[in-house]
Image 1 (cartoon, rainbow, N blue to C red):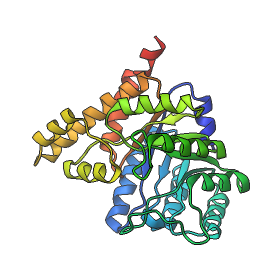
Image 2 (cartoon, one colour):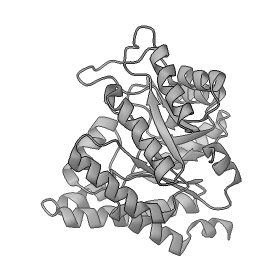
Image 3 (cartoon, one colour):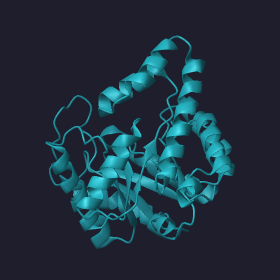
Length: 298
C-alpha cells in the first residue's frame, strides 16, 4: 500500500498516473476492463477514478477503485465531491473507502448538477473543497489531494481569488495538487510560479488529456474554459472528418507537451485516459524511452 503524498515525496523520477471514469453501461464496463488490462503493464505509480456529476456514480466509483486496488494490485485514489451529499453521507462513503483499504482521496467541491448554473451547497453538506479536505484530515487518515486550475476555475471571481482558495485547500491538509487539463504549457508554468509566490509548496501535477476527437475536445474545452492554441486548433480543423488523423495529431502533441513539462520540472504527469489505452501507452512509452526530465538535470 502506498500513500500518494509519500510517492511524490520520495520519487527519484517523474510520477506517472492514470485517470479513469466509472462505466455507465455494459459496453462501458468492457472498455474499462480492456483499458485496465492493457495499461496495467505500464506500471503506473497510481490510478484515480472520477466521481460522476452530482455524485451520480458514487457507488460505482468506490467499486472500481476497490477492484483496481484489490484485484489488479495497483494503488488507487478515489475522487470525492461535495455535490448532492450531506456531511453524514460523505462520512458514509469515506467509511466504506477506509474499510476497503483505500488510502488516497482527491477532494473536490464538484460542479453544479446538470441543469444548474450556480453552485449551491446541499443542506447539511459542505460548501468549499477546503472543508472536505479538513474533514478528511481531521477525522480520517487519508492521503489527500486537491484540484488546481492553471487557467483559473470557471466560477472564480479572479485568478487571485482562485489561488487564495487553492492555498486554503493546502493549508487545510491537501498534500498534492492535480491540475485541470490544459493545452498550452505556458499556463502551467506561470500558474506554478504564482502558486509558489503565495506559499503553496506541494507538488503541482499537470493533468494531460490526449486529444482523440475534434468534436469531443470542442465540448470539453467549452465546459472547462480551457484554451486551444490557435495553431493547434487550425491543425485539428484541417483534419475534420478524419478522426484517425485527429487522434494521431493529438497523441503527437500530447507527447511533446509532456516532454516539455517534464523537462521544465513537473513532478510527473496525470494522464486523463478516457478509459482508452492506446494513446496513453504510446505517450508514456515515448517519454520513458527519451527521458526528457534528464535534460533539466543536465
